[in-house]
Image (cartoon, rainbow, N blue to C red; front, side):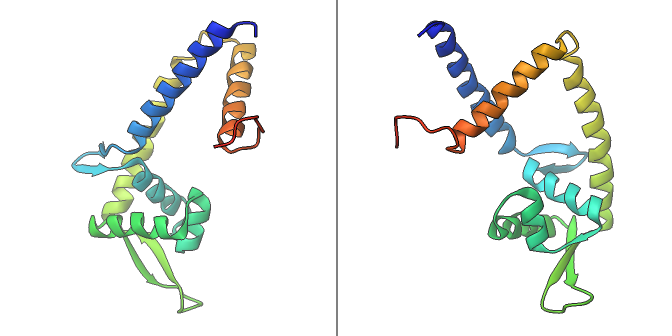
Length: 157
């Protein structure tokens, strides 16, 4: 195979990036002054903040997680008094989740933080050409396909 050593290096760095991303996802941070949140909790706040009110199944669908996982995350945010729930206005069998005043402030503060963070990240890519960016995108999509089992290999675990 051509470029075998380079491919090994790419695979090692992909693993390292995956571990760094995993650590980032599962470490609580003070995205909002005085409030430590996990990124998944912040994502739930964002979806509710954008929509106004959502059911647990809508949250699960938007976050691409199970309804049970959404319920666990929501439970933590209810304890932190960032969201609350009430009966669905047209179907009392369901509850809807909405932001509390504290949750609204956290959401708004995070959106400002996120804008600045995205600008910082984008500045890291200023020297990349459109061709470079397309290669990165192609690689990321390939890794997603490999990890989701869409690329059939000879090895099965």
